[in-house]
Structures are given as C-alpha cells and as structure tokens.
Amino acid sequence: MSYDGILTCAMVGELKKNLTMGKIEKIYQPQPEQLLFVIHTTSGKKKLFMSAAGNHSALYLIKDTPENPVTPPSFCMVLRKHLNAARITDILQHENERIIEILFETVNEMGFNVNRKLVVEIMGKHSNILLLSMPEGRIIDSIKHVGIDVNRARRILPGVTYEYPPSQNKIPFSEVTESEMNEIVGTELQPERAILNGIQGISPPMAQTLSASPSGAFAALSDINNMLSSAVLKPTVYVDEKGTPCDFHMMPLSVYEGDMGYSAIAFDELSEACCYFFSNRESSNTVKQKAGDLLRHIKGHLDKQKLKVQRLREDIMKAENSDKYRLYGELLTANLHCIKQGASSASVTNYYTGDPIEIPLDPKFSPAKNAQKYFKKYAKAKTALKEKALQLEETNSNIDYLESVTSFIQRAASVEEINLIREELEETGYLRKRKKDKRKKKDKPKPYEYTAESGKKILAGRNNKENDWLTFKKASSTDFWFHTKDIPGSHVILFTEGKEPSEQEIFTAAAVAAYHSKGSSSENVPVDYVKVRHVKKPSGSNPGYVIFTNNRTVYVNPKLPD
Image 1 (cartoon, rainbow, N blue to C red):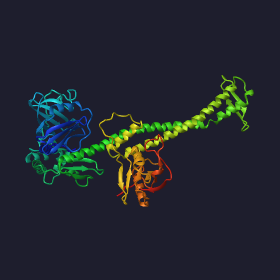
Image 2 (image 1 turned 180 degrees about the vertical axis):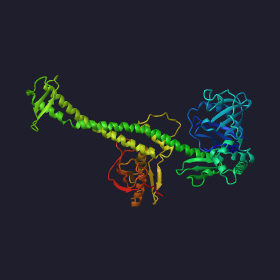
Image 3 (image 1 turned 90 degrees about the horizontal axis):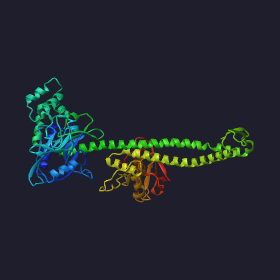
Image 4 (image 1 turned 135 degrees about the vertical axis):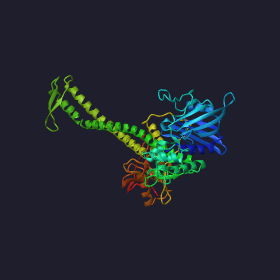
C-alpha cells in the first residue's frame, strides 16, 4: 500500500481545506481500531474516518456512515468527553512522516479554553491514534496501549508524555537537493532501493516510479512537490483483472502502467480514491473471511450428516436381513416338543425348503421363550426399518439443504449476502444465535434482477430464505419458476405479466438459473421450469426446499442477459 509520506502530505492539504475551523458534532468508534468524526463546516457536514488497523491504517473523508456498536467503547467515550463541540484549528503533518496531527480548541468542565491534539500514526501494524493535552503533550488516552513489555523505548499509555517514533535519519522528500539526489542514486545499490533507503516519506512503488522517470529522479520529485504545493492532484487506484484494488496514490505510478495486468481508475478527490480502495479491498477480504468461517461450520455439519447416512444405511441393511428371525420363531414354535430344556441350539428342518437348519438358543430360557424373543427381534427390526428410512430421508434432505447453502456462500459477492446466509443458518439451528441490535431494521429482500430482451423482469434469489420469499410471496401463480435439475441453486422467477412466455424468454430465464447455481461453470446445464402454481412447499421443510409437478426441462449454458 502506498499510503506514504507524500500521500500523507496530500491528504493533509485536502483535510485542511475541508475541515479547518470545523466543529465536532459526533464521535463514533465503529470497530475497535476505527473512529468516525462528524464535523460541521461552512460547506456542510463532513465525515472524517480514521483507522489504526494493520490492514487499513489510513485517514480520509467518507460519505456513508458505517454501522456503530450499541455501547460505545471506552476510547470513544474519552474522545466525546474531551472533543465534543471542539473546533479544529489546524491539521499538520509531522515532518515528512506518516503522522497527521489535528489541533483542537475546546472548553473544559471548568469553562476554560483548552487545547487538544489528536495524533494519527499511519504505520501499518504499528498504527495508533492518540489524544494529547496541550501544551505539555501528555497522553490522555490512545486507541492502542503499548506497555513496557511490548516496547521498552516508547510507551503509549495514559499519563505518559508523548514521543514521536524514532527518526530513521533520512532526508525529507520536500527538502532533497539535486546534489543529494544524485549522490543517493549514484550509490552501488539499485536506484529504487537507494531512494527508498535515503529519502523520508517514499514508498516502494513511488521509489520505482522516481527511478524510472525519463527526466530523472530529482526532476520527477520536484514535479511531485509542485503538485503538492499547488494542490493539483491526480488520485489513481489500480485494480487487478478481477477488479480487486491493489494500490493507490495521489498520482499515477509507472510501476503499475503498461502490460502489468492492472487497470487505473482516476478520481477527482484523494479521499474518494482512498474510500474506493479500502472499501472494495476490505469488502473483498471480509467476504472471503466470513465465507471461509461459514464454510468451515457447514463442512462440519455436512460431515456429521454424511456419517449419519452411512450408519443409517448399515442399520437398514441389517433390518432388511431380519426375516431369518421370523423363520427361527416359526420353526421353534413348530418343534417345541423336540427341543430339550437348556439346550444351546436346536437342529430342525426348514419346512419351506426341506433343508436342516441350526438355530442358536439361550440356555437360560425355555424353547418357547426363545421363539418369543426371535419374534420380538423380528418385529423390532421391521419397526426400525420404517424409522430408519424416515431418518435417512430427513438426513438426505438436510444434506441437500447444507449443500445449497454452501453453493450460495461460494457465490456470495458482498458482506450483506454473507450476513443474510448467517441469519438463515441461525434460524435453522446450524449456528448459535448472536445478540442482535434492536435498533437495526430488518432488511428487505433484494434478489438479483435482470431484464430479458422482451423487457420482462427476471429475479433470482440470493439465499434459501429469499428463494422462498421470491417463489411464494413475490411471484404470482401465472409466473414461471426455474431451477437447475438436481443441482443446488437459486429460484428464478420469470414475470410473465399474465402472458405465455416465448421460447427465447424461457431459455433466457433458464440460463440465469444455470448461472446462479453450482453448475455455473458447466455447459448444457439441465433446468426445470414450471408455472408457480405447481410449486409447493412441504410443511416443516428446510428453507428453499420445494416440490413441483408438470415441469419441463431445458438444457442451457449459464449466461446473464446482455
């Protein structure tokens, strides 16, 4: 990530322009290492977001308000106490480091004017946010506490005098002379490595960009300083072939240009570029993490269900071989007069086949009692056969449901979809229910929506609960329902507006159903379709499970409408 000293300088200029003399209205702490300030300015409300998380250390303006916890953390309460209604007097960068200082003027509980400073250290996993009392520079509190057991040289604890991180003895990028640059680049090291090691505030991609400049590293750095002083920036985000952001800066970086497989997205404001980069990258990472957690849970349940199926089939096989117990009972009853009391076995003739047969006996019981025991064993096996068959059907249904959930998780593209699937698993008992925020409104279903060439609407469910809603609440009885044959996937509804769909519309909707299924990477995927009136949901069945009749099947390649 290129949130280096140069980008920090550019961000300070943008924030100073937008926030100076702004008044703090609200302070939130959405995550343990994140803060959000709502600031009233002459140009309207601004939202300043800052994060000390290792994979998201940054400071920039945002437009959307993230979800906040019901109970504010302690650091948030400290900030509210000291900065509520405070006015921003200045925003500075410490030397050319990734350290931003926000100066405040406020009134304490005694009614006296006091000064406070918020220090945001943007240093990867060592990032921190600290509130200082001025002018003495004493730490009031910080979002991360660093004790002597963690860092002997630099403690970050309430009451300790704040000290800047140790200097690396580099030349600030804003003060480098041409002779100093020539001396640095002229060393035996690679030029980009020499620039990185000798100049303060330079990231590896920026060092490569400077060293590769046709006009020379010093001329390129001079242009950058001119851009910063004139505030004429060209914020750029670079994304890979999958659209995942990989880096960004206040200007284009030559290291990502050319045939590198990256695409550049230009923005007007640096905060917009930061917001796009972090929100999309974090969303992608969060989706993968949350999806991975759910998949591990589902795999555990699937393994248990599959083991249960194996044992049930073994029990059923044993129960199906129970006819011999009835035969033993019948033969013992017919030959009671020939069997001695206390015998351990009885040799009798099987009157069905005429062959001799040896029947094991329990010497503790009479021959008649042994016969009764065999009849009971036979009756018990027959009852078990029915019960085990029902259990096997239920277990197979659970496996189908879990495999459909797995398919939805693997195809989820947003955190919202993952959260909806989690809620579904909590309601069905596969996950422990979490404490819910009572203030949060229940989300309305938002199925995937497409339009056929004819203009008719096609909707596809994003999870099993949405499948049920789409089929039994949203669709009318004359609309058409689509689902891949014997393959987990979404319920797809073609809204016919009371008219019979054309062959082209049917194939278009079927292709959507194939696309939103586990067979999305296959060809000639079988898709069943039928009018919604012929689709029923058995009472007590899992979400998304239906039975249907009068269906037809088409074979299509997965595809979304153009």
